[in-house]
Length: 166
Image 1 (cartoon, rainbow, N blue to C red):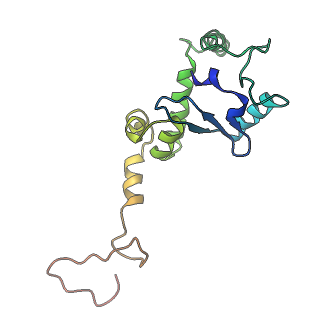
Image 2: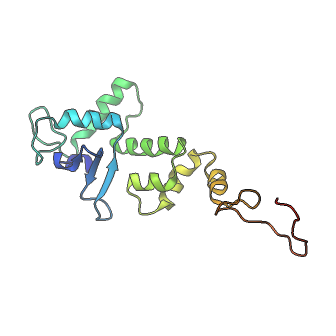
Image 3: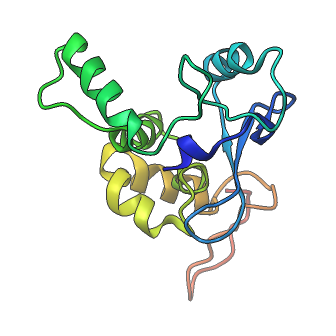
């Protein structure tokens, strides 16, 4: 679990990211934090040294991988979430919320650490109701009208060129 491995040095307050140094694909990746998450991490790291674990218990010891299970179970009980969920569901919630806000699949894929958009589209594209339509409309060049670099004139085979601009 990535959360238990974070050290304070993995947080870059200047750009609001956490570096995942031991990621699935073996590559370092950077998770973009929201402003709210950055505020929380700023409070967590205040006055602490870079080599300390980011998340620690009240006694100062680093979280162990399995210690989040009980905490999540208790949080779910307090919130009335039945059945209780684990931290991984929070990752899916993050991806789902981004998709529902029309964030491009490539951006979601990068945030979640997917190598490309295939897995992202499989799990999240259905949550973006206009994803396919919006992508086609944004990507397809204009055939009539503007003379910008993304516009093309439509000339029908066998037709006379227009005498006036379309």
